[in-house]
Each structure stands twice: as C-alpha cells, then as structure tokens.
Image (cartoon, rainbow, N blue to C red; front, side):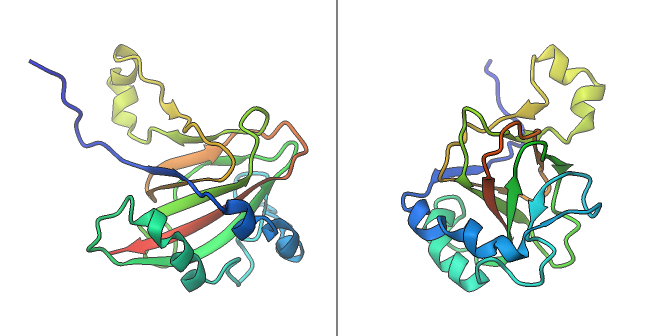
Length: 188
C-alpha cells in the first residue's frame, strides 16, 4: 500500500536570470498608465490593467518568455500571450483572491513576474484551494492541509499556473513599490 496524489495541479516556478535588464525600467516607463482600481476590482492596488495597451507587446513578451514557458508546457503546444499589465503595491495595497477564467478572450493559463519584490518585507503572493469540497468534508482539517499555499518567491521569479486557480496578495505593509508584471496565455 502507498499513497497516491489525485489530480494534481502543477504550476511553473522559475527564476529569470536577466530580469533587471529586461523589466527593470518598466515601473518608470509605465507611470502615466498606473491608476487605482477605483472599485473595478475588490482590492486596493495600482495597475495598468484598464489601459487599452499591453505593457509589453504580446509577441515581444512571448518571444522573451518562450524558453521559460516551454520548460512547463509540452513542446507540441502553441502558446500565445493574450495581454499583460503591471501591478504596483505600496503600503495598504492588496489583491483579493480571484481567478482569470471570466476574461472576455479565451485564456487558460496566467503568469506573474516579480520585478521588485523583497521576500522578507513585501506582501506575499498566495494560491487558495478553490475546492470547497475539501473544506466541507473535513479533508483539509483531517489531512492537516492549509487551504492557502505560499510559493517561495524571490525577486526575478516567474510563476505560471492554470487561470482557474484562485490567487491573491496579502496587505502590503511597506512603501516599497512591490511591482509585478502579470500576463494571460492562450495555450492550445
């Protein structure tokens, strides 16, 4: 007898070696596009999401990220970046648990690049177990599973995950310009 894991959800976690060269000036170049969410999301964060333009052209971002993405995805799939935006968190900012499956265009994976992030003092990114059956049936309590998972992120890391996975950011306690570049993918 042995234990077997049922239907695991895998996410990709990789460090981008030259992230400062590629994304280091993103915050300064995007300043005119950064706005409060103003009730559009149930959170407090500054973002470029509601601007009509992608922060980085999808083809350009896709070309740069391709070697990292194909470490996660099988070689026979086609990957297309649908959109990208920057989020900026300062003291008091946060992002509610959410998923990306209600996006108007088809997306099935999402990603985040942690451009400016101090793992000791900045608000952590987290995944939330969205299967309520686990909690209702007592599974998470009996098996001593935390319904929240914190990836061990450091500055320059990228994570990619299925868009249906709920994720969020706790309240930022520092004025540090915690900056991320988020993107959605269509993978077929």
